[in-house]
Image (tube, rainbow, N blue to C red; front, side):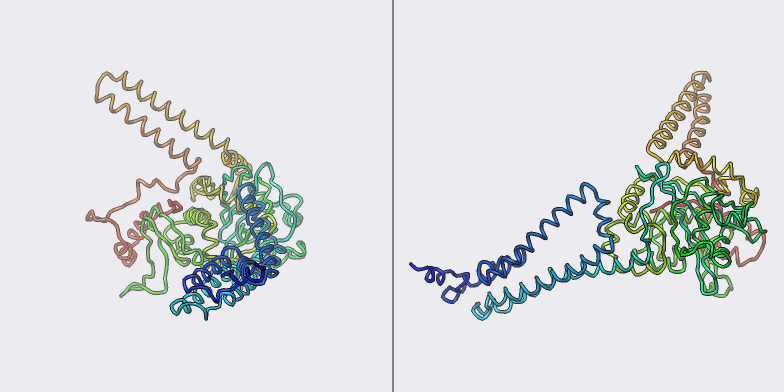
Length: 560
């Protein structure tokens, strides 16, 4: 039998004489081949040259996917850094767009090969619909991938720097994170919150050193351009506080930092001198748009330990009182609510606000997962480019994403360079800081923020508990009576619990003894928002002082 006759008997290439069920089976086979092995339908039933070319591309794509999976498992930071590279994003975005168009062309060609006119009446609409659905699924996904790469290229280049990678110093990356408003009436940004994040390069364990905005007599390193102007520190009076460095340098000394964000660079240098750490990079966040980033992430979850006031434009009915309150407990905040929570200092102090900002920072890190980035990519990129800029190199993004993943596994160690970690607010440590003492405390903190330091702290805590337990046992034996024994074991146990709390919080003090904070109204009912509003409405000093007492534990909060 001649080859031509054999080809005519092939139902895949010549379905005319085949039965209706065979034509249907053929249609779904070709559809499935184009879906799973692009080019396969053309090889078996269409233009073989086109099919072989498509199969070559398909095999190449699968090889790249396998390589990416291996890289993801073996060295994920390399893969992320590659994807974050602007050249790769441009080439990859264009390639994905071309693949999307090519897959559409293959599906349309497959539909022509299927020849819907030969199908049974019930299949004439179903098969073309399935082809269109498959086109949307496949080419649509590739098209979205192209959009993500190209949009990410635009956003990341607007956020990150293009310089060489930064090196860890003494095994740590020290990054100054500043948040504040850059309004139209301001030159530069005036940071309302500043903190040095010291991240262990090996484990991701993180220490956060919060610098009060009103810290005075701030020194500059000897090699800083600002040291020549302020050789004895930033001490031109009460207006020369830490958060004034950024706008002052941006307005008066920008020429000392050509081609750089002068305010950010000078503040980074000051943070190095304040903490005694080598601060290698900065991140600046415009808090005016930060709420949009939180909204883009789907909100943020925080558990508040106390009542936190915030002001709105709408007063309570029949009053001029605009104070509202977040109750103790878990909250899932919108962007606006998160800013109100983090910025509030009514009835409390700046130091309460710093603690809540630390909670918000850890909550954001906890929730900024790869899943969140993928599912909410567009919103995050749109807002991120508008409100964040940094001198961190874009090519090192993979390393820092890996560090962020590791950092989420452990609670941040925290230190505030003021009350309560350095005396009380009345001691005015921020006005008359002891920088040698700060350096000693910071060094001790970052030493704990390593795997070895965490292990040593855990062993010390276990030893302390064992000693307390032994002391309780010895006291019980010496007492000679059950009541004395109970009393003896009770006293050291309280001491042990107190020690445990200090260890777990890495030596942090509390702004106030939280046991003294009222939790009930005079009639014994729990405190609620209406009660707090009534107290404020009275205007009596005693009642206002009582509100301050009730709010004293609102520095206590946790992420999630």
